[in-house]
View 1 (tube, rainbow, N blue to C red):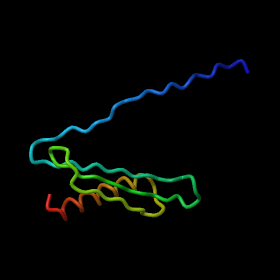
View 2: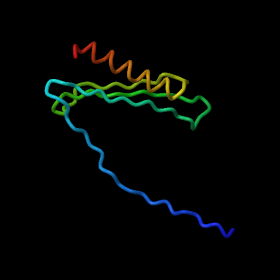
View 3: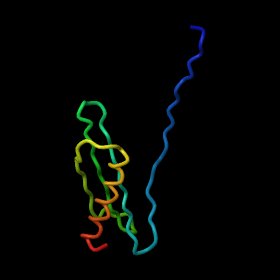
Length: 88
């Protein structure tokens, strides 16, 4: 009522991946908390790439109900355990 509502503008942004040092691997992880249900399901996922950007291995896992911080940390730990099991 007489107040101006700011318009929401969407901006596209290209998100990419760049290689690290030769012989290195990259571990990318994410935690996702689904608050749309009363169960608050939490999922973690991750991806390992080699120095050329090629896919090495991925994982995903539902870890039940927990905080987003715990989910993010669990994703990192699971990713490091996966890398260790692959010998990298």
